[in-house]
Length: 428
Image (cartoon, helix red, strand yellow):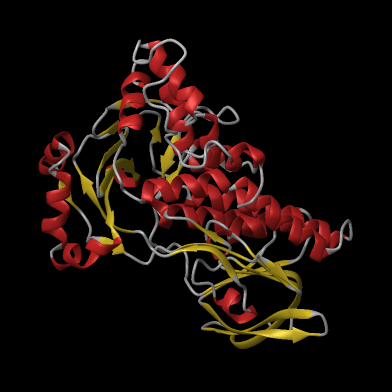
């Protein structure tokens, strides 16, 4: 492929890049996707796709495929710790289940869907530069095993190449709302556990998650404070077992099963937003917005961002709106759309444990299935935190079990620091 012109080049073919390319191709645009990896291949991931993410995939016509790619449906969440909650998150767009899909299966499915839409895919391609045109980026320079050195032009280059995006680095995209890594995470896979729902255990300084995934395996992850990463890494297996021991049911299940793969882990989990567009370029997915993954929102966020980015780029390519204007509006809308997910992820990533207010509220909420559903709706990104964790709602739930006196609350402090000002819709 020599000096081939495209409407758009997408750098990165995983859960943000492949859908962006697919949606643009479905609009009739000529799209190239390049990725240094080949597919199927694995990558560090939370795996979890919440109801809102699957609902987005349903809108693309991909939900039937996701339902048959080897990962079982997850309907129930059991969250343990100082207070136990069990229930189901709210349905989104009629989708009632979540799924934890291995990236070897998910990313290949998304790439295949992009190819079916007419996208040209080059894997094993390393981008080492951008072509400078009269009005900004005009394409990419790179090398692939199959095609050698290439220069490929396009009207726009879209970086979907992750939080350490090479496209972002090449264009000098500024970051904002930066918070250094708060946590680390290790995970692996066990057979023979019999787990069919999602299990979550929270305590001060630690989060443990377990849920079924492909091939009858259970993914188990441990999250801890970033400051404890060195000690944990010095004895990963022993540290992992020590953390799981705080969840007796899960410890018993793992003892009855067998670990099937090595441990995967990282402490490279920065929190940031990036400026997401400029002359001839844009960023999507983790390249543009990266909160701590402790709530498992990454794939669902990537799907939402791909939808919004594809719409904006299509408007620009089709001449319905100036490209610069369409992309700037896309970024502003993303910052509003992701605000609750961002704030809640930072709160959970503090690993501070429940305050007396939160513990009392959860004890009362545990008796109300609808309130448990709302709590899990916040965790899954379907409901903004400011609709649930407010002083008035906490008072209402506590009063429902006679834990607050009439007209006053024994727990006046909001569970969530920003809940009293979140309804303004302003970016902070």
